[in-house]
Length: 448
Image (cartoon, rainbow, N blue to C red):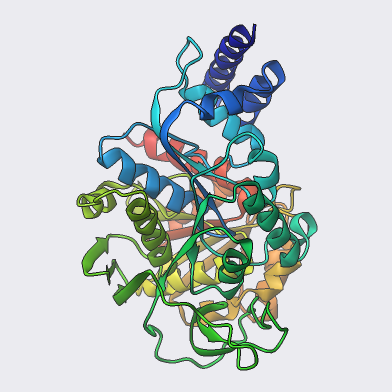
């Protein structure tokens, strides 16, 4: 009977996903919800059929990119991988990833699983399977009305780690919060990070830093240098807590039109922008190495890897180069601003901010973003859009940056394609991402 339930659940998930795709809806969460309703044990049963290892990727920023890179690295080694590529990272989305990858007979043929998991959902997902590895990218403030203060997120992750005591944590050693959590968990762990100071001008910009106080003793943390936010070479002058020796240490870092660094004697290159992507690429490399992969094709993986789902996703429409990127919290937005500023050409900018429940209805975090940096970034125009356009327009006005109002994101994009400087960045928060991605795909398709 249980096998029959599993088969019906798999069929239902596949049919739901197909129906949603042809009607232009996302549908992944619904597919998983239906599968779990029919067979509450489907996730436990299918994950148990993974032949080798299960990775989960957690953290505030960089989950989707890191998880997809781990998947691509495994596939380059000839492995068959289950992956929730779209970033649907709560229980229903994870169940859908397994169900939609199963055969019509209800069985799963996979060597590995690479699963992005929402931090608050770990305690709901880990009872279904115990991962072999957790990649922990970073911990920043995110959606305060949903997650609460960062201590709540840390407590949930600690509880999840206790559920899987043999799981190895691959942690960002440059983040004092993530490192403290890994050390206190009792789980085996290794670290990755950027060992040398990259930004030579270390004047304090007033950027919000989460790790101001030591988690061990409460004293104010000090830094030899920052990379951004609280990431850097930290130490507590009172109790001695400090950045540990990095197992995977990125040196000779270059960021600009492309990224490069060396890690443990291996040269890594990627045609991406954004200093923060060094961490994502390094985290995926560390995960592959910890799983025993040779990763001799990793640079080829990076050359072939095409960012998707609005993570530095590139489009070319009617002569305009367009970059779509997710910006959902202060740390992420500040890194988006840095990436925009690395482009020395004149550019147009569209910022879409929504305040739906999935975004976090409290958008006061906009006041913690350093938007004044756009004054010196060669910006031709800024258009504000989305449900919370008034909040965004006011935030820019406060730093004397004029903006254009266009609530309709499709019209905003078309206007900039028609009248812009042919170099457009579109920054959106969570619930605007899927719609904006589809609009850009549609416009790109119409010109072919």
